Image (cartoon, rainbow, N blue to C red; front, side):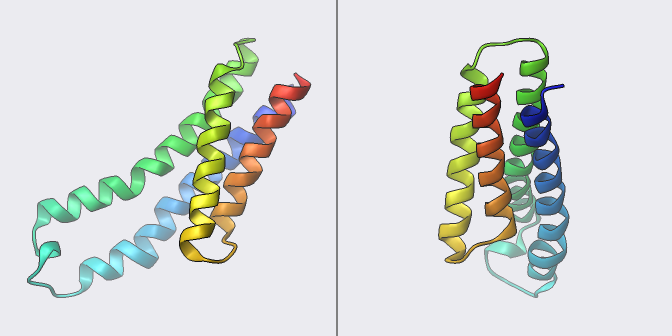
Length: 122
């Protein structure tokens, strides 16, 4: 069993679910409950912002699962290398944007390291 690819996949699904669920509860829900006559008054704008917020979640889960499927099928290292770049950039950007360590950013960096380990040891 490819342990490092499995770790990347599981963490990808976990961080994706947490990002989407907590994002709805803590950020988007309260933001959309505020009365506004500005940009957020338009339903279409709210839908676009919601979609853009959730796209990274889909990417992280999908890439994590793709790393695992790639390893199970003895694929090349190209996909995992791209995944490492995306996981690492996402983790660093998350930590930089919040100006402090954040569980999501730390998990994304762990995904990058697990994927590097998968490339190195499998």
